[in-house]
Length: 196
Image (tube, one colour):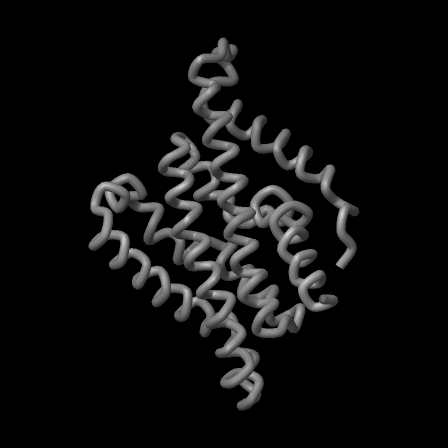
């Protein structure tokens, strides 16, 4: 029961208290670039969640059975970048085959998951926190859920802004950044909720 509680707290902490976008400020590029429509944002969030979950598994396995075993921790960043690139290629081929419309909607942002700092940050956090395999998988999945939550909330707000009377000087990027800042402040309200 104690293990389950710890995993549940890790999940909630990663989604809300330490949200990758709004608290750790990782993954800002897709957050601002793909959050124009809820459908596209949700699809990007699902793809990123899938990649983050696989990255959580792969980074733990590679770190434990290769890098630590042979004393190659100094190759951590390069190794994780290669693994992430391979995982993203797999996801891209899968989406292209199963949903060409979604593939076109995501456009350039799908291959950009490879360079999404949130994915690399996830792998590096897993090794620095010395998570177990289960914790790594849960952390990866929760980080993806938090990413999806933030990007979908932002897309919903941006869709509603189309009907709002926004002053001319704030239209476009300025209002988007203003909303992102307010969202980050709102998520800071969760700090102290869970102490891990």
